[in-house]
Length: 289
Image (cartoon, rainbow, N blue to C red; front, top):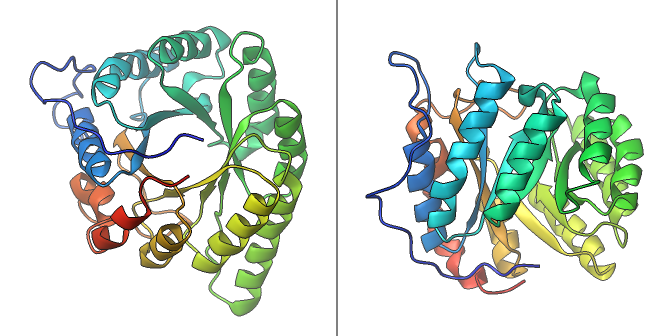
């Protein structure tokens, strides 16, 4: 597993930019992602970069944006991976192969995201087809969906990197226990079988328990933060257990309120809300796998 190392951010001048958003739209600009990734890198935190399409963008337009984002991301010389919303590309194999090939040439790892649970079969079929030419793939699965128990078996058999998301934020004790049980069931399923696991979870106890189980089974593991959720607890777990950290940063359509909880009011500072109160807890954990 790659170790988060200190990096020097690339200078802002002279970057090639993706197509500019249409004036007047409420959108997060790509330059904001570059700034976020640079600042994260100073604290030895990797970035998971994703594009959220605007409402009228075609799959081909989305692919163009992803392709044009790769060169500026590479120039950052930081630990960046690309999170691709397969549904936004219309499950189009040709477009996906173009993005994957360009990412491979740029040495940027790719994680596929499942944004439309009802199209799980379409996504898994895409993965099977893409693996013929691109073996270094990652897949996002929700630990709160029963279907994921089937998909994760397939993913482990295909040697995919896994990004496991704790979706449900239950308000009752019974709901929290059920959600924790679902996450633990998924961790038991992948421990000792998965090539690499990224935990997208903001529950400190769940992260600590999952980390112990995965490391005992010899499975490499990392933590990914979502900017709209509380973070001090999981950052403390990451620091004390020398766990590599990423933060998810997005551009394009601002993140709407969801089951993850309310977002920050200003899209420009979504990424920083993850870290603003806890930077001092991060650096001691750097440099350990």
